[in-house]
Amino acid sequence: MHHTSIITFRLAAPHDADMIRTIEFEAGQRFVSVGMTGIADASPMELELVRRKIDAREIVVAVDADETCVGFLMFEPQPTSFYIQELDVQTSHAGQRIGAALIEQVAQLARAQQVMQLTLSTFREVPWNAPYYRRLGFCDIEEADLDAVLIARREAHIARGLDESKRVFMRRDLI
Image 1 (cartoon, rainbow, N blue to C red):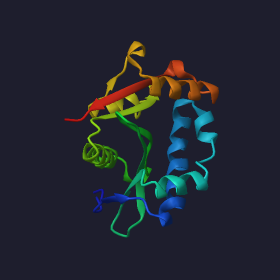
Image 2: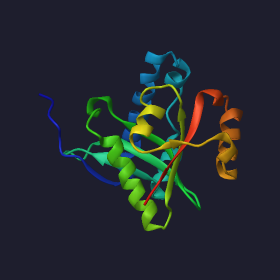
Image 3: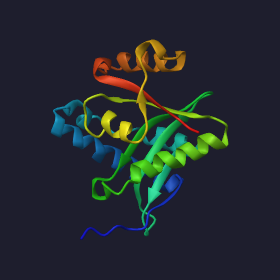
Image 4: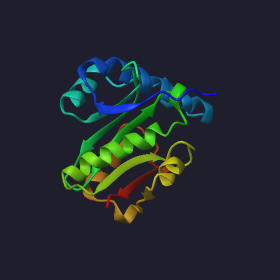
């Protein structure tokens, strides 16, 4: 039987930075299975960026009983939404609804600031991307309904060489 450890959630601390990058790198490896080797080959985020996001209190981590980081959600507060930049859970802890719980944590942070929407951009067809977020209450944003912030983000993706035709922006309204 799979042993479910007690998972707790908190804002990331400086000592979590290396583990966050390790988890991100490992999560990228999953894309090999769907033929997206470019993502798997990408280097993890720069340590400097991770440290900056930790200082800004814009990463929430899931930690096990040993205080080891097993998942994280990095977000960017915007005037009308919190944008989910990255959500990764260690493969060893998959299937324990840790991702859903991390999203819930960030939803609480957003509500506390009277921000009533979460947004993200993800791959349409990858099983643990758009279909996963739909199960968690996110819905697709039609292209015509993208706001200036999301359009700017899409332009940045294209500039970086991402294939936006394979991606979709999604939102979840918080009540």
